[in-house]
Amino acid sequence: MPERISPVLSKPLARYLELELLLHNFFESTGYCKENYGRTCNGCCNENVVEYPKIIAGCSELDEERIRIYGVGDLTRSCPYSSDIGCILKTHKTPKCIAYICPQFTKALSEHGIDYDWLETHTLLISILNEAKFDWWSGSKIESYRISDEEFSEIKRQIKESLKV
Image (cartoon, rainbow, N blue to C red):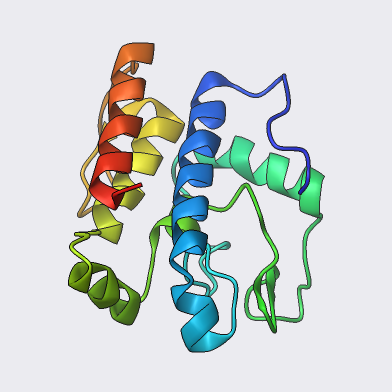
């Protein structure tokens, strides 16, 4: 696995990467995508979400680190980081890339008692990355908000509990 967290990263990006790893490990542990589609599962890559418009400041640091670690990817594909076996990114995915899962996977999780809302997760990741509260529907910044270490620990605990990790 590539270098995980550079010592020069901002605290918001380091926290984001912690949550990304938690989600990545959870999705992989289900085996859903491997069993049903023969692909690795770390968020869905059925659309070019890595290049989705980013009006949010925290994404630029994430983008810079992704390019530093993985390069620009294969620009001839619909998503430069997709491959025949799934996404090549192990880290540094955009919030939508790591949060989004297909309706079939969402239903499978629900059948196992896990209520996963990708829009809420996406908004949480953007909020962590930008130290701000965001409106989940519009993606608009509502207000700046610095999350304390205690609050971040509680967010991680709640995610683990909701995913039954």
